[in-house]
Length: 283
Length: 268
Image (cartoon, rainbow over all chains, first blue to last red):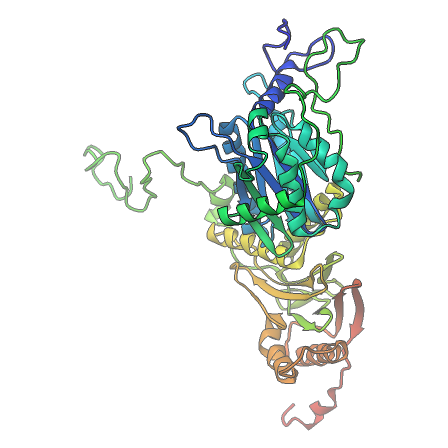
């Protein structure tokens, strides 16, 4: 990343019209392990890759339930994620207390986006260094949202964030058309297969034949409150996914996180907003 | 200091509880909720805000039928025993799915209706086709009314909230000034609670919901009984209908008055 005189403060614009602090915050998301979100007609699924930081520790919790109808998967600074999930839980609970109904997902995300935006416009705050994939179900059906540290949120058919997530996104792109009408079992298998490509290269090769890599799966949908699958269910779906076929995508290099090369007329290009290539739903 | 006859004596203790005053047990950790100045300051001649209602609406009756709800109220707002405003709609359409019938202090009804209308406009500004449901509005009103009563500044109202939810299932509830609420196939406020509810309960078959015709006939009959017996009612009334495809306030209708029985009453 390029150190320059415009990047020390979030309230300082660069001459190119960029807020470098916000862009640096988005880099933090790429440091987290990959996570995938996708949905079919009635169910939204989150799959997260759990890699412990050292042999001695247990892996971080990537999927956080927020309410019966909503949960998030995080990539980036866990402490920031904790603060955001506490806020989301509080909002959902207050809404339920006042209105005897679950918070509509689109409105909750707009609310969160507005809260996160203040941190990009005040000199005494910094942007939240965490990206979220939100899976929720309400009267309008299942939703997958991607929330970035720049306080932008995208309504997605499917998406993936975190390190080495590009291969997962490629898988999702390739299979997008089959998601809407597939069964709940199939959509979970798709999620597992998508994240398979985001394993670090050495694990990818050695564990080709052993299907148990360390992932967390969560589902939410019609008549299905938000639930993180148990170990047994995890095993069952991983086996199912393996039987369905080889994971999609050729082996790829490690620094494929920037989905596009920088535009040639911008000498100071640097990091860009994650281009949501696939998957933004048209309103 | 109260009852302190000796101006020179020291108080018995400092920084402790004072009789008659609120003692802050948290020691400053959590700030005491102080009522705003306009509610605690006494008026001229030492008057305080009262919990009496001034211009009032009388009864409201709500009946649930298989496909929706009917809410009826007469068009009178009284000033004590004076029939002051005789052409006021007391049943309101809130949105495509909710009706509200208001009784009690009418200024308070108008005040809370304004807050509700603001909520509906916020919903429209979100522009996402998500409408508030009747059970959500009823729950919100209980929270607001309970909060007001707990602050000793109630909205002196008794309302009927009715409508259909997204799947077309009817909802009918009564919320009162204390924040009490309950749901039933027939709810009413004021005199209708005593006169109309038993009438409707008797006519309801045990094994099924009422049909629209049965419910309408019951409304007609009850408004007639209320006009004869409640001295703060009048013969003109409006009825709100809310079902899956339709939400509207209809009227005004007239009660079929028949005072010929009066001639038979001895000493009349």
